[in-house]
Image (tube, rainbow, N blue to C red):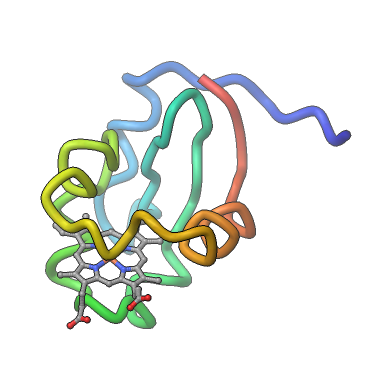
Length: 82
Ligand code: HEM
């Protein structure tokens, strides 16, 4: 299994726009989803609400994400661990 770099939540929080890259966390994993923002079926505006922080509070409101294919997609963008 690949080993990923470790980041703090503060570091993740510095990545909140396409210019600064768009990072999110899910559990203890860190993802750079910049290249997915414009592909998001729910719109770029919605995904950017979670930029720099945790996905869970938003995904709790949108159950459409509770499907295996969504986590498989997210995994492709993994860049680190908290
Ligand atoms: C739909 C991925 C963040 C709101 C979807 C779908 C995917 C996806 C794959 C389509 C699912 C399906 O129909 O089977 C992601 C990923 C995210 C993310 C990878 C973060 C990295 C968010 C956030 C919000 C959100 C933060 C809300 C603030 C929605 C909504 C839909 C949706 C409303 C339904 C769109 C529709 O069918 O009209 N998302 N999402 N998503 N997402 Fe996200």
